[in-house]
Image (cartoon, rainbow, N blue to C red; front, side, top):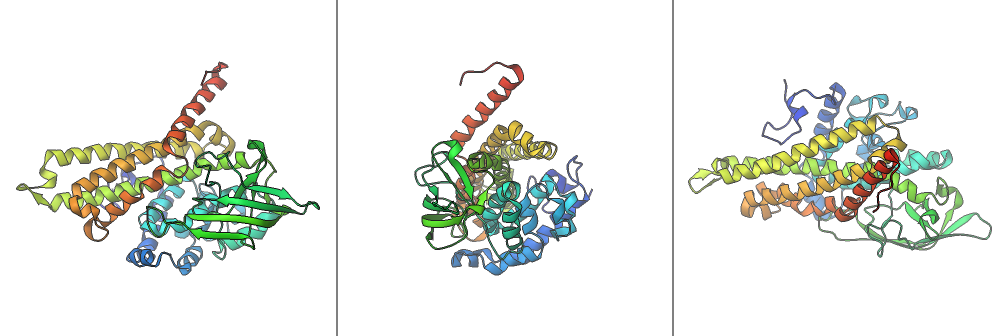
Length: 423
C-alpha cells in the first residue's frame, strides 16, 4: 500500500495511507495529487503577504479558472453533461465527478489556508443559479463566472435577521410597467455574496434575484475574527433597478431554493473543519514528538497521549459520518437528498464545529505559548483556533441546527408512520 502526505497519526484520512475504501478510486487519487501540487506551487509561502495586503490577488483567481478549479467548485458534487468539454484539474472527466471528488478537492485546497476564502461566493452562489435560473440567465452569466472574469455571491443574512432566513426586510417592488424590480435594503455578514433573497411578507414572498453590480449598491468590508482575508461584507441597496429577467426561478420560491442549497454549503463547512483539524493535530504531534518537558518528550506523557486519543476518535468519527452522507447524496435525487438528509447535514455541521473547537483547544494546550503565535511552529494551530467561529456560525448556528435536525427527524417519522409528533 502506497501512502500519500504525512505519515503521522490522523494527519490524513485513512484512504491517503492506501488502506481500502469503498468510496475512492484512481480518479480521486489523481485529483488529490494534482490539487496538492497546485496548492504548493501557488499558495504556500504567500498567505502572510496576502494577509498583510488584506486581499488575495485577482490573478490567483484567474489562474484557478485557467487550471480547471472553478468549474468543479461551482458545481459541487456533479457536473452537467454540457460542460463535458471543459478542463477540470487533474484531468478528471465531468461524467466521473462525484461528491468524493468534491470532498478531495476541498480537502487539499483548505490545506492552503485562506485561499479557500476566495471561493465562498462561487460555491454557495452558483448552485441556485445553475439549478433554478432560466437558460437565458445562465447563458448570460455562467461563462464569465467559470472563466474567472466575474464573481458571484449570495446575500441572505440581514442585520436584524441572523440565522432566521425568513426574517427579511429587503424589498423588491416592480415598476408600473413590470419591467424592473426596485430593490431597497441591507445585507450583512454576506461572505462575499451578492445574490439577493427578497420579497413580500412570509416565506412565499421571498424570491431570488441576480443583481449585477450597479448604481445604488454600496459595499464595505467587515473585519471578522478569522483574519483579513475573510470576504464578509456589508451591502446596502438604494433604489437599485433590476430587470425582471434576473429573477431566479419562480417568484415567491426563493426560500425553498435557499433551503435546498444548504446541504452542500454545510458539507463544504464540514470539509474545512476536517482538514483544519488534521492540520492542527499534525502540527501538535510534530511538536509533541520533540518537545521535552519534565525530563521526557510530551508524547511520552500519558496526559498528552490522552489528548491525542480524544481528538483522534472525534476526527475519525466525523470523517466516517461525512463520507456516509456524501455517498447517500450521490445516490439520491436532489429532491430526495434534501427531504431525507436536510436535518442530518444540519447535525453533521454542528458536529464539525464541536470537533473543530475541541481539536483547536487541545492543540493550543499541547503547543503552549507557541499555540498563541501567528508565526513559527504554532502558526497553523493559532490560525485554526481563530477560525473555528467561522465553522460554528455560518450555515446556521449550533442551537438552530440542532433543533432543525430533531424537527426534520420527527417529520420523517410522521411520514413513515402517519403519526404526528408534538413539537
